[in-house]
Length: 93
Image (cartoon, rainbow, N blue to C red):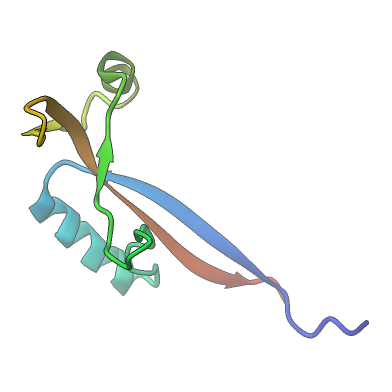
């Protein structure tokens, strides 16, 4: 066996307060060598919303993050935050 390359993938998970802030943050991260958002659906669309089920727990853990709401198709409120995942490669040798 000959190992000719070894790399480590760093990954960060980022919450954003608004769509505008998310776009600005993603641009800054890409400039610093991070990938664009890696959260992609099966059909290839970028995923940017993360549904919040336990609101009280989320607020306790992340009080500085804004929780948004939309009226869903079945007229129930969907609570979510903007959320992206980014990766970058770190060569170890």
